[in-house]
Length: 295
Image (tube, rainbow, N blue to C red; front, side, top):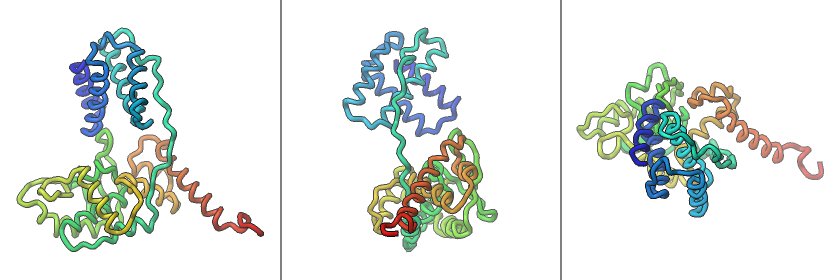
């Protein structure tokens, strides 16, 4: 089975233009599936085997979202085997993907965002940290897009960044003059001191003189949040959600927000209308006279 999995991974990586992270996730999911079935030959895999695997995932208390992702990985793998005539019967045909309860994305309020952005810049690393957090929020980037940014992707004179998102699709996102000023200072004054003799086009540089990683930024964000006194649990993606939610709350057009986020489908962006509506409900309940007792 492993050879078939590797063939499939190479196929989707090239044809679907997957990111390295997505490719690695598919590979990990399918290797786990293969290991559960003791590397059984593809032609011997039955529907009951897949049902047993799903039951196993539930028994080890995997999250619904994780189970759904792993089942999608398995289903798309067997779809590929059918298309390439390696199988005549698809054992996943009667397997339904688990339904995930939709939850609203976590966001930071505007005060919390300002707390993150007001960190002291008393070293080159602090300038880098502030520039990363600022740009993440200012442009609504995915963390992979942030860490893969190259110097030529940032146009300081025209105030925009060029992003290569999912499927390596290009989009242009405008940024504020205050963000431009911060990036200008970091790139032209402080970035070189972090390079330590290495050559890289990556904008954000680690302590080792190379491009910073996703995990590296996560640690920076977590450390910064602790320093400024934000106790809630959140991830880099929370800044992206906050970008979209705050734009919507201030009257931005949903389609424009979707384009800036790199969403292919407007339905993906519509989740933010639910967040905004929740806030409206809370504001109404709190402030409207007709909702107060005795009025």
